[in-house]
Image (cartoon, rainbow, N blue to C red; front, side):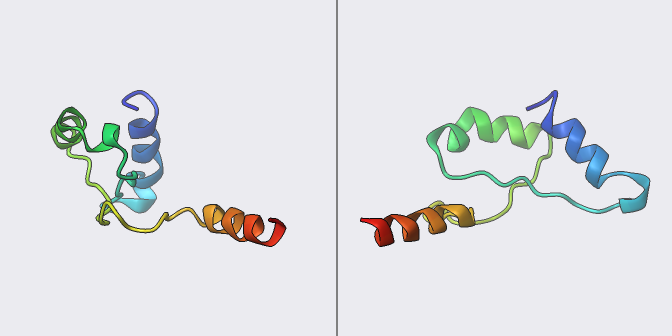
Length: 74
């Protein structure tokens, strides 16, 4: 993450054309993402998370499509 996501986000969202624009990191509520060590790592790097409750519906629309297809087929 440190070598890939952070440099890419800075390049895309902190460039001269987007000066001062904020970016938020989105992750699901998986245990690895909500671990104290992960939270500490994000805080140390001042990476702001997209606020959403841990039990929110999946934000990936393809999951809904797969569920609909499954119901139609079976």
